[in-house]
Length: 364
Image (cartoon, rainbow, N blue to C red; front, side, top):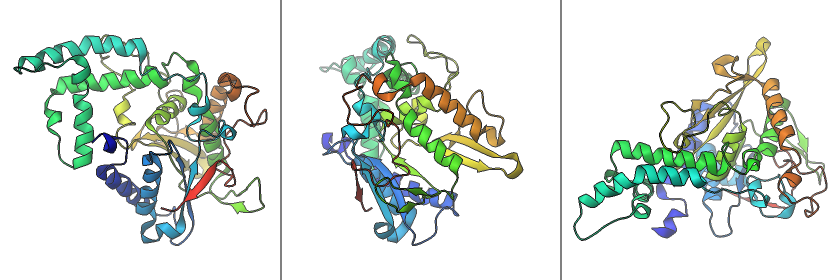
């Protein structure tokens, strides 16, 4: 099972394929049969292909039988020095980035909720005793074994419903303080801003815009559906940047708050998604609506549009203000004057330039 934990499982295979089909059904006018379709994926590691496989499977579901002809997955090498701020995992080149998995807050919460669970489980056993390091893995095994086998894992019955919610909150703390808005390394919450800035600009330019690759004269027309695939850490970093959790108070380390907007399980489950929808409302203008795994999450101080959306230009200004606070990517990450990227070029362009030397193409 250890090998399967790092690869795309059969359950994951089905989820990604079904996701492609569902997006095709949900947005039926976004794609014309037998036309090119481009996706992007984070390379992640040389020997672990689940992110790239996820993109390929989504393409097969979305495009159907012609996916291998019409689909192109552009795989971004996030460790190439030239990809500074121009990949789907910019944190991999940021020396000041530090995901501490929740740090002291995670330790405090684990010391609060786990000991009673350990005592309860051990009271049911004879000749075998577990410690907190063992027991905290039980829900983890529940999710992975269920996903791998397609059957509810027996590990799922080791925790009560209340204990599962306590474990869920442990994951919230892990992501909030590990690589999100509560991270000790403040750079963590800004790392996906170059990507977000470029994505919003593409939305502002509109679906009819065309772009020219830096190294050619070939015009590129992005698909109406822009699909990118990366890891849970980067999804959490993006969630920190988009504004929907800006009014979330810091998560306490000793109790579960009665109300909280931030629940990691809502956007980084086995197949987590953050979706941006450009709403063209005619005379009312253009708006941006954000969904986390299909649920609308409004930006707290910008939700006056249809469906609690934000005027697109206003949302662009919100992202720009965050970028101003972040400043220069290379300086913030402590790599100024050491990169092969020219000064002022540390921003995302891969969504509009298909000629970048740190990406390669795979067919679905």
